[in-house]
Amino acid sequence: VKAPTRNITAYTYYLKGLHYWNKLTPADSRRAIEAFEQAIAIEPNYAQAYSMAAAAYSQLGSSGQMLPHSAFGIVHRYADKAIELDNSVAEGFVAKASAYLLYDWNWQAAYAALQKALELNHGSIDAHELLSFYYVLMGRKDEALELVEKAAMLDPLSPVILQALGTMYIFAERFDDAIIQADKLLAIDPQMRISIETKGWSIGMRGNWEEA
Image (cartoon, rainbow, N blue to C red):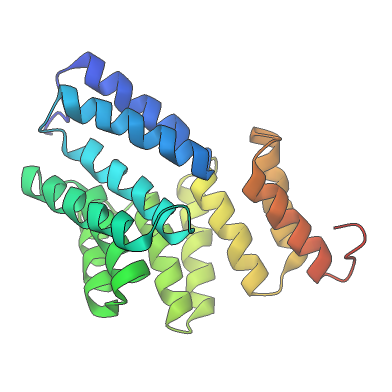
């Protein structure tokens, strides 16, 4: 197995980036980018850091926190660099798929990149999460929900997957289940904004907007 980096300082910045990435807020995505880019500055051949920085830029671009043209230009560039450095790293293909899916609307290329990511790492949580949204866009909501439920079994404490599962339950109009998922995330971080919003929307769509 190829070691991602031998530089402890770069690896520490990478772990710091993952910590912020899992908080699921735009502000924390920016902090994650800063940490990942610090890792890259120390270790320019750090494929995983390029991959995750690309993922964070994708989050900002797709949520309106950055101009999409600017954000996804960086996503493509960083993902390409990650794949060039190490084409065995699944996260590079996930990042590339995010640009294809969320900005380019190149469904075929997005699906191919995600399949490649899962071929490299069948347990890739980010690949499962993004593939589920591909299925939603293709009108295959049942497959999307099934995929995220399987991913939640692989990593039951992943904030990314717990939030994705809550979103899929809303799409399926299973609002009680969505509330349960939001509560799981709020147990991890009571201030997690996206989970508070998920719970509020679920309560409201269940018919109680006053409580929401």
